[in-house]
Amino acid sequence: MKKQGLAILGSTGSIGVQTLDIVRENPDLFEVVTLTANRNWELLARQAMEFDADSVVIADERLYPQLKEALSDTDIKVYAGEKAISDITANSNVDTVVNALVGYAGMMPTVRAIENGKKVALANKESLVVGGDIIMKMALERRVPILPVDSEHSAIFQCLIGEQSPLRRLIITCSGGAFRDLPREALKDMTAEQALKHPQWTMGAKITIDSATLVNKGFEVIEAHWLFGVDADRISVIIHPQSIVHSLVEFEDGALKAQLGTPDMHMPISFALMFPHRASRPSERFSFADHPTLTFREVDRVKYPALDIAYDCLRRGGTAACTMNGANEVAVGAFLNHKCGYTDIVRTIEHTLGKATFIASPTLDDYALCNAEARNTARNFLGI
Ligand code: NDP
Image 1 (cartoon, rainbow, N blue to C red):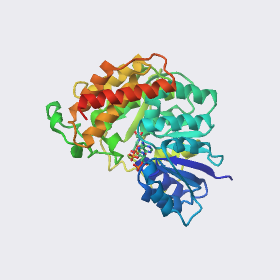
Image 2 (cartoon, rainbow, N blue to C red):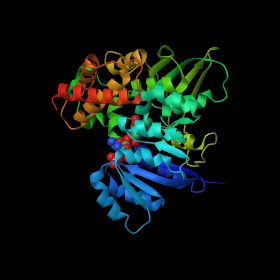
Image 3 (cartoon, protein in one colour):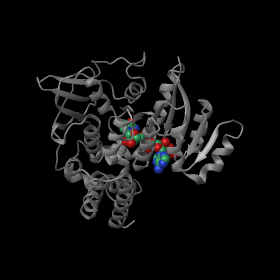
Image 4 (cartoon, helix red, strand yellow):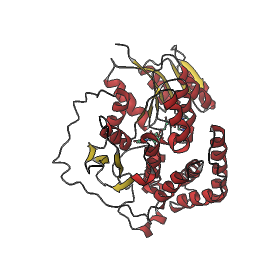
């Protein structure tokens, strides 16, 4: 059987490294064609040699010489620059593009992967938050599958397999992030280091901060809307601190279907790569004794205003969510660099949305302009 050729965009990040674990476990199924990183050229070079990649791309062009030198004894092709990441998806040996990039930088590679007719295993939720309208239409027209890697969306996808009747609503579970047990008043003093201690998942820095503000959950609502064609009013979010129920679907007869498992991204990653088959992971045995209690509670919408802001952006459509995303990326970067406080993240988003140009039916160029405008406004607001 021909191996599935993979382009893993963002191979040096949390999702990228776990994707390579799946490849390592299944050498007969996958072949690594290309790997990319932003700056971590040392790890990228090691990965490329271990998996005998055809090519690598480093987004930061200044690091090209180091990467080229590190791979000089091999025949691995070395490219640099953000555009090269999108271009590499055209490689004829690539069957599947795993988009594990973080932020707006992931959107054009998703677009190009679809244009090039490649199956997309999508972790980069920002692609759909910003350009879900265009991306889903394009994928439908070109009959390109987009398979969710996000655990909540993978759970919903798994619950929907085989169902023919309409659903009543999607219920997205939410761990509550690092500050879920703190009172509202304590949030303003929280530091980046505290926000980075996620109770359940080990992830990249940006998504961990987004989990603490619930921006991530708001983005997941938008992502679910585009992936499953369900309106905002029929998507609920519920806090589930144990992160065992990964999400649920409620049907019109009142039946609820859920997908459960230990919090481990290897499962949704492998499902996206192997669908309609499943990976054989003998080590995976769920222990009910270790998880005797599963609890659920409503989200405190005052403590977490970002969730309703995201719902509002989804209902407004157009460039609203693109603006929210751009402002959030700048504010999260500032928070991680100790240039602003935790509560400034949502303040920046609100301020930027209030100032932004709104385009109801944007093109890809409009998104680029809107993203740049949001970043500028956010930077000015934060004085950075
Ligand atoms: P990480 O920050 O761990 O990794 C991001 C990857 O993208 C790295 O390889 C990084 O390279 C690269 N990268 C960062 N910025 C750029 C850029 N401007 N241009 C090109 N490459 C870039 O992120 P995660 O793996 O945590 O998240 C990736 C995506 O998956 C996000 O959209 C996130 O929301 C989503 N996701 C993540 C989950 C998780 O468990 N981590 C769960 C569900 C969804 P370098 O290493 O050189 O910086």
